[in-house]
Each structure stands twice: as C-alpha cells, then as structure tokens.
Image 1: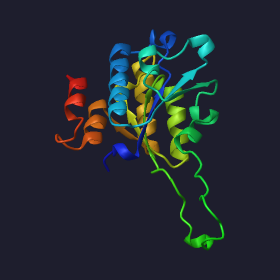
Image 2 (image 1 turned 180 degrees about the vertical axis):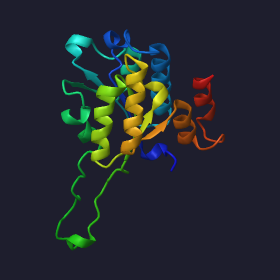
Image 3 (image 1 turned 45 degrees about the vertical axis):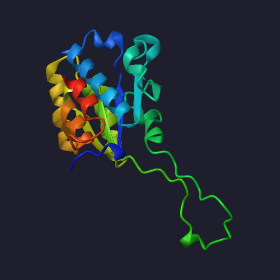
Length: 200
C-alpha cells in the first residue's frame, strides 16, 4: 500500500524548543519535520500540530507552527484524548435540501469531503506523546504512518522501543523521502521540482 496525498493528513507532535533541546538528533529531526510540512503545503495535505503543556514547554518552533492549519494545546500525552480525532475526521454534514424530495435511501450527502484516513505522524517524544497518539489513531481505525527520521526521544533506546511497539501495533514505519515520493508518485507531477528542492 502506498500513500496518496489526496487521502493523507500530517500531524506534527510537540516540536517545542524546551523539549527539543534534550532530543537525540534534534537538528535532523526538525529539518525532516519542516520538509514534511513544506511538502504537505505544496500538495494541499492538511497539517496539524500539537503542543504538550505549552505554558511550561512553550509553543512549537515558529517556522513549523506557521505551516500548521491549527495547533492543539494539550495536557494529555495523546492528542486524540484532547480532540485531535475530531480534527482529522470531522462529522459528516447532513444532506441539504428538502428531506421529502427523495426517499432517505436515495439521498446522497452533499459536499461530503473525501475521507483522509491516512495519518502521517512525526514528533517528540517518540515513546510518549507520539506513541500514545499513534496508538489511539490506530484504535480509531486510521491508517498510521510514522516518519521515523522526523521522530525522536531524549534517548535512542526509547525512540527505537517506540518504533518496535508501533510496528507491532500495525503502524507503517517510513522515512521523510518515502512520504514525499509516494505523495508525488511521478517525476511528471507539477510539484516534483519544488519537492526535489526540499530534499537537496
């Protein structure tokens, strides 16, 4: 199964300065998160952010926060526990028009958005907030893709333990470039050169 940009959403978890200062390979992780967010913007993939206890840890890094459609401040470690799922899967709108005009079984919802059930997630700390959010998304029947080179923890061991557990739970483990090239699918895509520039 390959990622499709039209069915994807990107969730960036807790790239907060006070946390990032202690994160293993933080500059690389942040650079890849920025690439993902910039690519998502070019391809019209929704981007959501979360911030753990922002009054203590601060907001996400400004360059990343600016690329998010919205950012969820949270105290629970899982963003899903604080409403992220409602952002990712908004309730369907009831059909418009006269309800008597057609029998109910023939009515079709109007303006129903294409469901974006593939959730690409990246963030810190991999073994806490990212893990708990991703596991809840899997429980809610989203397809979860964890971008390993845009995730980390304070220690490499905790990060790797999170990846092992997520893979066992059914998440797909991918890299930033895998996501970008699967979203593109072809060198003939109108945004190919722009995304290629993000990688070079």
